[in-house]
Figure 1 (cartoon, rainbow, N blue to C red):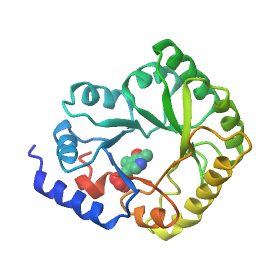
Figure 2 (cartoon, rainbow, N blue to C red):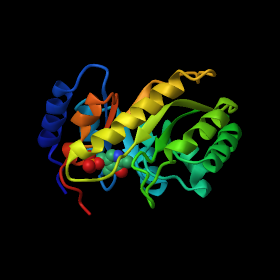
Figure 3 (cartoon, rainbow, N blue to C red):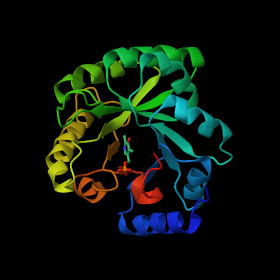
Figure 4 (tube, rainbow, N blue to C red):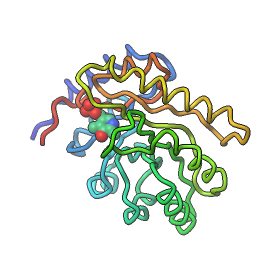
Length: 224
Ligand SMILES: *Cc1c(COP(=O)(O)O)cnc(C)c1O
């Protein structure tokens, strides 16, 4: 299939112009081809997010452009080893058990991994992310890790048609982010707040997001 490079580049430039300095754009590339990702890279995107280890593997290993690869989907513990090898950041750390496994795998690989804690800010069952009340236990554990570097929080928020409905959840995640940043044992660098997707990134930026994750807004409707 032909990639419409011009359309993708124009969408990226339009969004880049409209977001404040200091807000970074990540391209969510689930179901997308390597050619589409490369087009986004050439238009200036440097961060790419994958939902699945298996889907990421062929793209990350064959990409001939120096992108930063983030995992943004739920990670099963039995995929921690390849995830540590593939990704530059894990945005979807959502349990103590996963943190323990990642710490172990990073030690084996002699690698340091920046992580974001994914918060289930909508407190929805069957949703990824850790419940807000369980975040502190994970933060404390991360203080003791030598391989995992806590850098911030990520949230999806409830998926609704109306981005205004996500606002309270972004607000709550920002409050939690600031509480952690100000905690008595400060983590090394709490500086990334990853919130907002194609239909909601403006509301998320209003509420303090400095990393937005865009799929359809860059590439158009998904192929599958
Ligand atoms: C797909 C996805 C996005 C982007 O969603 P769009 O609505 O296509 O912009 C952002 N974050 C995560 C975790 C995703 O899975």
